[in-house]
Image (cartoon, rainbow, N blue to C red; front, side, top):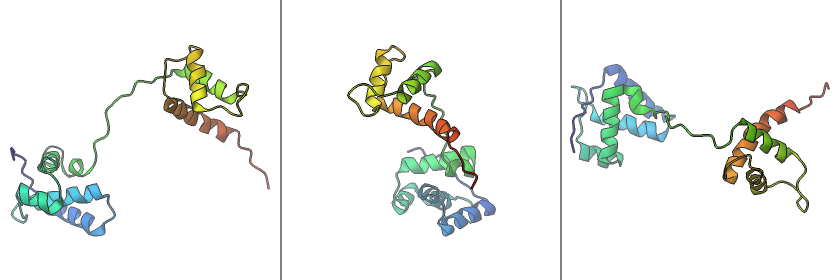
Length: 161
C-alpha cells in the first residue's frame, strides 16, 4: 500500500485530540480517528506508528488509516475528524401538484369498506388517477408526514386558561 500521507500535528492539535479522547463525549468514530491521528503523528513528539501496528491497536483496516491520514493532510484536523456532507441530489418523485392531490385525498373520507386510508391505498389511488408515476408507499409516508406537521400545528387551539 502506498503510504504517502505523513501526519505532523502541532502541540495545540495534539492537546485538542488528547482532550477529546479523555473526555469521551465525542462519537466513537471521532475518538477512533483521533487515536489514529495521534498514533500516526510523525513530528518529533509523536510516536509515528506503522500501519500494521496502528491497525491492530485501533482495530481498523489500512484503508481506514489511509483515509484518515489523507483527510488530515489535505483538509486539516476537522476534515479528518468530521464526516463530509452528502452531495447526492435526489430527484423528487412527486411535484407540488401531485403532493397537493395526495394530501387532499389523504384528508378526505376513506373509500367504501375501509375505516381509514392506508399508505398503500393512497398510493394506489394517486397512481390510478394519473397524478404521479408509480411510487412506493414510503414516498407517500414521507410526503404525508412532511405536509401534515405544519397543518397540525396550524390547527392547534390554545386555551386562554
